[in-house]
Each structure stands twice: as C-alpha cells, then as structure tokens.
Length: 461
Ligand SMILES: O=P(O)(O)OC[C@H]1O[C@H](O[C@H]2O[C@H](CO)[C@@H](O)[C@H](O)[C@H]2O)[C@H](O)[C@@H](O)[C@@H]1O
Ligand SMILES: O=c1ccn([C@@H]2O[C@H](COP(=O)(O)OP(=O)(O)O)[C@@H](O)[C@H]2O)c(=O)[nH]1
Image (cartoon, rainbow, N blue to C red; front, side, top):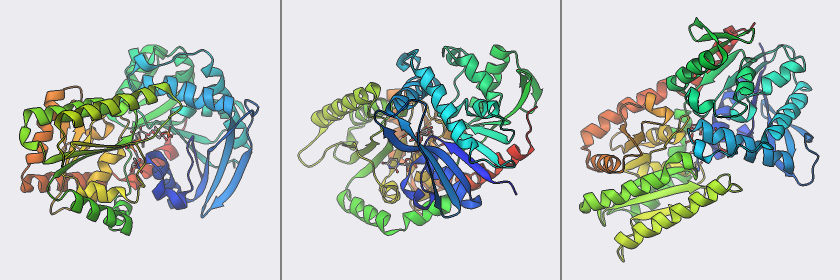
C-alpha cells in the first residue's frame, strides 16, 4: 500500500491533535488512521536566517513521521504574512479591498514553496501519495514536478474559491492557475467553489470541460471535486463528556442559570463577520427588549495573525463595539456582551457549546467552519441549542436545518436570533436530529476516504 504524505503550512503532533485548530485537527486525524509522513513549517522563525534556507527536523509521533522546516524571518514575512495572508486570504474571501498587492511578496512565496519542494524530495519514496493543503502551497506540485517528482499529488483548498472576476485581480493569477494543473486532483470545500473554479479555468485558460469535473489545459488534465470537510463526531462527543468540558459546562450553567446564552467562537478574523454580529446583537436588544437582562452573548475571539494591521484594527473595532453595547444596555448585575480575546482550549469548548442556547456562526465568507459542526456534536439531543449559520459559510451547503442568515442584514439577523431564542423544544430537537445525522454521515473519515479514493483513481497526463 502507498504511504500517505500530507503537506500543509501548519503541522501539529497528531498525538496532541485535540489541542490544535481546524485544519491541523482534521489532518492529524487523517494521518492517525493510516500512518505516514506530515511535512510543513516547524513554526520556528529564524531571525537573520538566510532567505530560501531552513533546517529540516524529522521526528516520530506514533505511526506518523513529522518532517518540518524552519523559516527565515524574511521568508516568514513575505510568504506567510505577505503573499498567503496579505494577498491570497483576503482575495479568496472576496475582500479585494483588504488585499496588499506588494510586488515583494511573490518572491518569498515562490522561494518557500521551492524550499519545501527541495526538502520534501529528500523524504519521498517512489510510490508515495501526496496530499497538499491550502493556499500557502498552491505552486508546490509544480516545484516538485520541476525536481522530477512523478508521484500522484492531490490538493485541497480549505478556504473559498471566489468568482473569476475576483480571482483575476491577483496579478499572478495565471501563474497560480497554471500551477493548479500540476496536480492530479483538486478538492474544494463546496459546490459553489467548484463551480467558480470551472468557470474561471474555462474563461481565463480556455480549459476544455471533459465532463465529470475533469478539465484540460496547458497540455494537462486535472480532476476537480467538492469534498466538504467534517469533524470526528465520536471524538468530539467523547471530549464533551470529559472532565474539562464537564467542568466548563457546570460553571457556565451556574453562572448563567437565569440567562440564555448566545455564543460565538472563532479566530479573530475579518472573514468571520464579528462587527456585523455585534451590531445584530445590539439590534436584538433594541427590537426585542425582553432580552435585556435575560440574554448574554459570549464572544470568544482567539488571537490570530497578530503581526498584521488588518487584524489589530479589527480588534480595536470590536473592543469599541462591545464597549458601546455594554455601556448603552448594561445594568449593574448584567452585561450584554462578554468579549474574550483569548484562545479557549479545545477540550473545554464542548462544555461551552453545550451550555449555549444559540450558537452564532455568521462569517461573511468561510471555507467550511468546523465550529458549526462541533456545536452540533456537543449538544444534548434532549435539549439541544440552535445553530444560526451564515449562508456564506461552506457548511451552509450541508447544514440546511440550521437557521440560515445573511450576516450583512443586521435586522434580519436580529430577527433570526430572536427566533432561535424562542424556538420550542420539539422544533429544536427535530432540527438537531437531522443536523447530527448529516455531520455523522459526512464526517472527517468520510472526507479523507472520498478524497484519497478519488486521488487513487485520478491520473494527470
Ligand atoms: O494557520 P493559521 O494562519 O493560524 O490559521 C488557521 C487556519 O485557518 C484556516 O482554516 C480553514 O480551514 C478549516 C478546515 O478546513 C475551515 O473549516 C475554515 O473555514 C478555513 O478558514 C486556514 O485555511 C488554515 O490553513 C489555517 O491553518
Ligand atoms: O478559542 C478557540 C477557538 C477555536 N478553536 C478551534 O479552532 C477551530 C476553528 O476551525 P474553523 O474551521 O471553525 O475555522 P478556522 O479558524 O480554521 O478558519 C475549531 O476546531 C475550534 O474548536 C479552539 O480550539 N479554541
């Protein structure tokens, strides 16, 4: 059997995967099941290190070999903060207004992909199957092929793929698109992303649609598909009954025994729609004053990409919005919003999810959003909470029994929050049952197996 080689910017020890975030948890799970090699950035930034160079560290973690590379400070700035998160992240989330098309970034992005390709080549076996993840590494297959790699290589994009006209604003978009054709299989989170890819390559590269999502361009044929990522429902249910989550649940129930909790959990990121959510919550208090003193919003915003101005600006905006709502509506014995700018350990999160009556997952755009699925998995089926979900999250294609909202519509979102708070038990149970069925059927194992089965059958040529 071929060995699985997973490549991603973030790498985490899969034995400790429960402590890591979305992408890392899912990949840890995929590798735990099959064993193999996980290759990527070590997380170390070397001040004064030579650009395009980095030490390779190899260690064993159970049945998974971890191979990671350090990055020089110059490469980290240009590749991770610059091109990946200053250009690709905003554009792929439809935010051209936030993109910084700095001509200096692309050199570092290319250099790090070349560095990864060189280091990875030393670890590869001829019949390995490679699975590359996310926007940091789009040209990796092209760089590997240039060094002679002939292995099967798949790519999965964890973030949205925007429409053609948005994508085409990236000065290097043709180069990126050509690089995509060096993969055998391209995976997207949703049907909408897949459709955008199909239109884009036909319009911009004159690609020929061979049917069943196979496209021919640049003398190569690539298979594409939608593979919505899931969670390990059983692992999450077990976490829910663990000590950390139970303690958290008990604390929350005691603290908020007389109140209904609304909950938001995410990285502090402009894609997550946090200012819009806070405004909608304030509109809820204005339109439905019965919620004054009886509803509390807990918003966890875990620190992310803090070296970037767009992220620090957002923090200031959120602090000011929360301050205004608490100032306008707060009472001596009740504060409407609790804003927590810290990471909450994943082991404790299920307790928080279970104590909440309503989860607010209202991103402006999101590849998938695993928090939505974790919230469902953590609920008590006899008395479940309600999921309010943005129609612009990848998860909305699957989770149809959630209350779907347009996060730009402040009053509409406030009305939906009210509906969620008022929803009768029977309706909550019926919706939850169907949502749980969905996340069980399309879980992380299903995601991995479908992608790898299709990669096994796909062959570029
Ligand atoms: O690695 P960071 O820069 O700290 O960012 C964390 C991860 O954020 C993004 O996650 C995406 O993947 C999730 C799992 O598929 C998906 O549910 C979510 O919608 C996406 O935003 C990013 O794509 C990852 O590469 C980062 O590691
Ligand atoms: O304080 C926090 C906030 C988030 N998460 C985890 O981070 C992941 C976020 O994944 P998601 O797909 O929702 O969004 P991303 O951050 O990857 O864009 C989920 O597994 C959360 O449980 C966490 O462990 N602690």
